[in-house]
Image 1 (tube, one colour):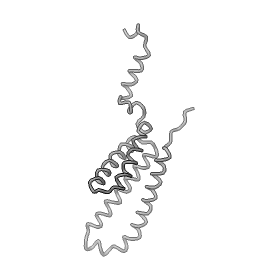
Image 2 (tube, helix red, strand yellow):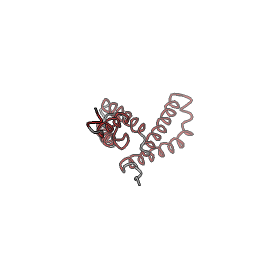
Image 3 (cartoon, helix red, strand yellow):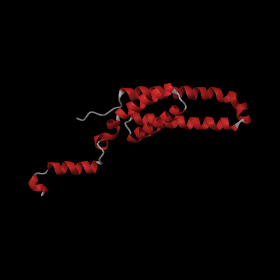
Image 4 (cartoon, one colour):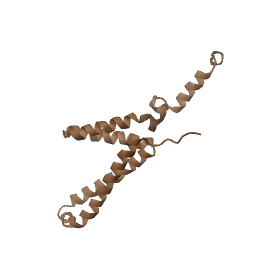
Length: 144
């Protein structure tokens, strides 16, 4: 019987930290929005910024959920987003964020095979690898 794959402990910890920060963000938003109503009337850009930030936070929650479910698309999205974040942090000279970003990117990359599988990590398509395996299993007489 095949053992069901599950997300590694590091991914579970990072996802838990993200979901905790999301809860604090949403709680803070719920508390602050009624008190900031006057600010929205003077500067509607504040409201737009809050809406965009909330959409991004919820989208990132979907990415972390996908990482927990070993979704290959979520892994690719995480690599791109953390790579872009790393570049932004480098340009803004945020040393701590750069170090944390490098560690997270390295960790996610080290789990590449878990998300993509050995066939994609090897650089071939599953069909091409299967063809290579079939050719390798043929005797010299069958090959021609």
